[in-house]
Length: 235
Image (cartoon, rainbow, N blue to C red; front, side, top):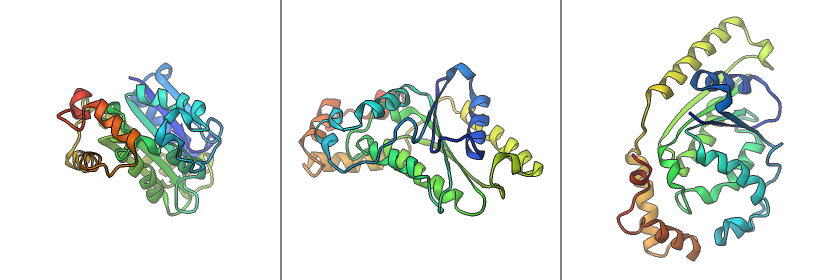
Protein backbone atom coordinates (compact mmCIF):
# COMPACT_ATOMS: atom_id res chain seq x y z
CA UNK A 1 0.00 0.00 0.00
CA UNK A 2 1.54 3.27 -1.15
CA UNK A 3 1.19 6.13 1.34
CA UNK A 4 1.99 9.75 0.57
CA UNK A 5 2.26 12.26 3.41
CA UNK A 6 2.14 16.01 2.90
CA UNK A 7 3.15 18.03 5.93
CA UNK A 8 2.14 21.66 6.27
CA UNK A 9 5.35 22.49 8.12
CA UNK A 10 9.08 21.76 7.85
CA UNK A 11 9.62 20.85 11.48
CA UNK A 12 8.65 17.52 13.02
CA UNK A 13 6.25 18.54 15.75
CA UNK A 14 3.16 17.07 17.35
CA UNK A 15 1.08 16.95 14.18
CA UNK A 16 3.92 15.28 12.30
CA UNK A 17 4.31 12.63 15.00
CA UNK A 18 0.61 11.78 14.94
CA UNK A 19 0.60 11.53 11.17
CA UNK A 20 3.62 9.22 11.27
CA UNK A 21 1.96 7.05 13.90
CA UNK A 22 -0.98 6.50 11.59
CA UNK A 23 1.23 5.90 8.54
CA UNK A 24 3.36 3.25 10.21
CA UNK A 25 0.25 1.47 11.49
CA UNK A 26 -1.13 1.33 7.97
CA UNK A 27 1.91 0.36 5.93
CA UNK A 28 5.62 -0.35 5.77
CA UNK A 29 8.25 2.34 6.07
CA UNK A 30 9.48 1.73 2.53
CA UNK A 31 6.00 2.45 1.18
CA UNK A 32 5.80 5.92 2.77
CA UNK A 33 6.74 9.01 0.76
CA UNK A 34 6.85 12.38 2.52
CA UNK A 35 6.79 16.00 1.39
CA UNK A 36 7.32 19.01 3.62
CA UNK A 37 5.87 22.43 2.98
CA UNK A 38 7.28 24.95 2.32
CA UNK A 39 10.55 23.06 1.78
CA UNK A 40 9.25 21.09 -1.21
CA UNK A 41 6.94 23.76 -2.67
CA UNK A 42 7.87 27.23 -1.48
CA UNK A 43 5.54 29.33 -3.61
CA UNK A 44 2.20 31.11 -3.47
CA UNK A 45 -0.26 30.99 -6.34
CA UNK A 46 0.15 34.24 -8.28
CA UNK A 47 -3.28 34.10 -9.91
CA UNK A 48 -1.92 34.05 -13.46
CA UNK A 49 -4.49 31.43 -14.60
CA UNK A 50 -1.91 29.90 -16.94
CA UNK A 51 -2.87 26.45 -15.63
CA UNK A 52 -6.41 26.95 -16.93
CA UNK A 53 -5.06 26.88 -20.48
CA UNK A 54 -2.20 24.44 -19.89
CA UNK A 55 -1.24 22.92 -16.53
CA UNK A 56 2.42 22.82 -17.58
CA UNK A 57 2.44 26.62 -17.86
CA UNK A 58 2.16 27.09 -14.11
CA UNK A 59 5.39 28.90 -13.14
CA UNK A 60 5.89 26.31 -10.39
CA UNK A 61 4.84 23.29 -12.42
CA UNK A 62 7.99 21.19 -12.01
CA UNK A 63 7.93 21.32 -8.20
CA UNK A 64 4.19 20.87 -8.02
CA UNK A 65 4.19 18.01 -10.50
CA UNK A 66 6.86 16.13 -8.52
CA UNK A 67 4.47 16.06 -5.57
CA UNK A 68 1.27 15.43 -7.51
CA UNK A 69 2.77 12.53 -9.48
CA UNK A 70 3.30 10.75 -6.16
CA UNK A 71 -0.13 11.81 -4.92
CA UNK A 72 -1.83 10.35 -7.98
CA UNK A 73 0.03 7.04 -7.54
CA UNK A 74 -0.82 6.72 -3.83
CA UNK A 75 -3.46 4.50 -2.24
CA UNK A 76 -3.66 6.58 0.94
CA UNK A 77 -2.95 10.27 1.46
CA UNK A 78 -2.12 11.72 4.87
CA UNK A 79 -2.15 15.49 5.28
CA UNK A 80 -0.81 17.05 8.47
CA UNK A 81 -0.85 20.69 9.46
CA UNK A 82 -0.34 22.56 12.70
CA UNK A 83 -3.16 24.92 13.61
CA UNK A 84 -2.14 28.50 13.02
CA UNK A 85 -4.67 31.16 14.05
CA UNK A 86 -7.53 28.62 13.95
CA UNK A 87 -6.69 27.50 10.40
CA UNK A 88 -4.32 25.33 8.35
CA UNK A 89 -0.78 26.62 7.96
CA UNK A 90 0.04 29.14 5.23
CA UNK A 91 2.24 26.63 3.31
CA UNK A 92 -0.63 24.11 3.31
CA UNK A 93 -3.10 26.75 2.14
CA UNK A 94 -0.67 27.71 -0.60
CA UNK A 95 -0.48 24.07 -1.69
CA UNK A 96 -4.29 23.91 -1.87
CA UNK A 97 -4.33 27.08 -3.97
CA UNK A 98 -1.68 25.74 -6.35
CA UNK A 99 -3.65 22.54 -6.96
CA UNK A 100 -7.05 24.12 -7.61
CA UNK A 101 -6.98 22.88 -11.21
CA UNK A 102 -7.43 19.36 -9.76
CA UNK A 103 -10.87 20.33 -8.47
CA UNK A 104 -14.04 18.81 -9.90
CA UNK A 105 -14.94 22.19 -11.36
CA UNK A 106 -11.82 22.06 -13.57
CA UNK A 107 -9.88 18.86 -14.41
CA UNK A 108 -10.34 16.23 -11.71
CA UNK A 109 -8.17 13.11 -11.99
CA UNK A 110 -10.13 9.89 -12.10
CA UNK A 111 -7.63 8.22 -9.75
CA UNK A 112 -8.81 10.51 -6.94
CA UNK A 113 -12.24 8.87 -6.90
CA UNK A 114 -10.76 5.66 -5.46
CA UNK A 115 -8.44 7.11 -2.81
CA UNK A 116 -8.54 7.22 0.97
CA UNK A 117 -7.27 10.22 2.89
CA UNK A 118 -6.58 11.25 6.48
CA UNK A 119 -6.23 14.84 7.66
CA UNK A 120 -4.48 15.57 10.96
CA UNK A 121 -4.07 18.78 12.92
CA UNK A 122 -3.10 19.67 16.47
CA UNK A 123 -3.52 22.86 18.44
CA UNK A 124 -2.37 23.93 21.88
CA UNK A 125 -5.91 25.21 22.39
CA UNK A 126 -8.77 25.61 19.92
CA UNK A 127 -8.91 25.46 16.15
CA UNK A 128 -7.68 22.00 15.15
CA UNK A 129 -11.05 20.96 13.75
CA UNK A 130 -11.35 24.07 11.59
CA UNK A 131 -7.79 23.57 10.33
CA UNK A 132 -8.69 20.02 9.37
CA UNK A 133 -11.83 21.20 7.59
CA UNK A 134 -9.80 23.50 5.32
CA UNK A 135 -7.97 20.50 3.89
CA UNK A 136 -10.89 18.08 4.03
CA UNK A 137 -12.99 20.44 1.91
CA UNK A 138 -10.24 20.72 -0.71
CA UNK A 139 -9.80 16.93 -0.90
CA UNK A 140 -13.54 16.48 -1.34
CA UNK A 141 -13.37 18.80 -4.36
CA UNK A 142 -10.49 16.71 -5.70
CA UNK A 143 -13.05 13.90 -5.80
CA UNK A 144 -11.69 11.83 -2.90
CA UNK A 145 -14.68 9.96 -1.45
CA UNK A 146 -13.28 8.70 1.87
CA UNK A 147 -11.64 11.23 4.19
CA UNK A 148 -11.00 10.74 7.91
CA UNK A 149 -10.45 13.96 9.89
CA UNK A 150 -8.51 14.07 13.16
CA UNK A 151 -8.12 17.35 14.99
CA UNK A 152 -7.05 17.38 18.62
CA UNK A 153 -6.13 19.92 21.29
CA UNK A 154 -2.92 18.75 22.94
CA UNK A 155 -2.54 21.48 25.62
CA UNK A 156 1.18 21.67 24.87
CA UNK A 157 3.63 23.52 22.66
CA UNK A 158 5.38 20.42 21.34
CA UNK A 159 5.28 16.62 21.31
CA UNK A 160 7.55 16.28 24.33
CA UNK A 161 5.26 18.45 26.42
CA UNK A 162 2.10 16.41 25.87
CA UNK A 163 0.84 14.69 29.02
CA UNK A 164 1.06 10.90 29.13
CA UNK A 165 -2.71 10.54 29.44
CA UNK A 166 -3.20 12.57 26.27
CA UNK A 167 -0.57 10.51 24.44
CA UNK A 168 -2.40 7.34 25.47
CA UNK A 169 -5.56 8.76 23.90
CA UNK A 170 -3.66 9.64 20.73
CA UNK A 171 -2.26 6.11 20.59
CA UNK A 172 -5.78 4.64 20.75
CA UNK A 173 -7.16 7.15 18.27
CA UNK A 174 -4.42 6.55 15.69
CA UNK A 175 -4.92 2.78 15.98
CA UNK A 176 -8.64 3.24 15.39
CA UNK A 177 -8.04 5.43 12.34
CA UNK A 178 -5.47 3.02 10.89
CA UNK A 179 -7.84 0.09 11.36
CA UNK A 180 -10.61 1.94 9.54
CA UNK A 181 -8.30 2.53 6.59
CA UNK A 182 -7.12 -1.08 6.52
CA UNK A 183 -10.65 -2.48 6.75
CA UNK A 184 -11.92 -0.21 4.00
CA UNK A 185 -10.64 -2.26 1.08
CA UNK A 186 -12.58 -0.41 -1.59
CA UNK A 187 -14.10 3.04 -1.38
CA UNK A 188 -17.13 4.20 -3.30
CA UNK A 189 -18.15 7.65 -4.36
CA UNK A 190 -21.15 8.73 -2.33
CA UNK A 191 -24.15 10.81 -3.29
CA UNK A 192 -22.41 14.06 -2.38
CA UNK A 193 -19.36 13.30 -4.53
CA UNK A 194 -21.49 12.15 -7.44
CA UNK A 195 -23.80 15.11 -7.01
CA UNK A 196 -21.05 17.73 -7.24
CA UNK A 197 -19.55 15.91 -10.23
CA UNK A 198 -22.89 15.88 -12.06
CA UNK A 199 -23.41 19.57 -11.31
CA UNK A 200 -20.00 20.40 -12.77
CA UNK A 201 -20.80 18.16 -15.75
CA UNK A 202 -23.95 20.16 -16.43
CA UNK A 203 -21.94 23.37 -16.32
CA UNK A 204 -19.34 22.00 -18.73
CA UNK A 205 -22.03 20.82 -21.14
CA UNK A 206 -23.60 24.28 -21.02
CA UNK A 207 -20.21 25.93 -21.68
CA UNK A 208 -20.33 27.56 -18.26
CA UNK A 209 -16.96 26.22 -17.11
CA UNK A 210 -13.63 28.04 -16.82
CA UNK A 211 -12.83 27.79 -20.52
CA UNK A 212 -12.30 25.72 -23.64
CA UNK A 213 -9.37 23.76 -22.22
CA UNK A 214 -11.40 22.47 -19.27
CA UNK A 215 -14.28 21.47 -21.52
CA UNK A 216 -11.90 19.70 -23.92
CA UNK A 217 -10.53 17.76 -20.95
CA UNK A 218 -14.03 16.62 -19.95
CA UNK A 219 -14.76 15.61 -23.55
CA UNK A 220 -11.49 13.69 -23.77
CA UNK A 221 -12.32 11.81 -20.57
CA UNK A 222 -15.76 10.93 -21.94
CA UNK A 223 -17.50 12.50 -18.97
CA UNK A 224 -19.85 14.63 -21.05
CA UNK A 225 -21.26 11.35 -22.36
CA UNK A 226 -21.65 8.16 -20.29
CA UNK A 227 -18.20 7.97 -18.76
CA UNK A 228 -17.83 8.48 -15.01
CA UNK A 229 -14.54 8.65 -13.04
CA UNK A 230 -15.74 6.37 -10.22
CA UNK A 231 -16.53 3.62 -12.74
CA UNK A 232 -13.17 4.02 -14.49
CA UNK A 233 -11.30 3.88 -11.20
CA UNK A 234 -12.78 0.44 -10.46
CA UNK A 235 -15.43 1.56 -8.02
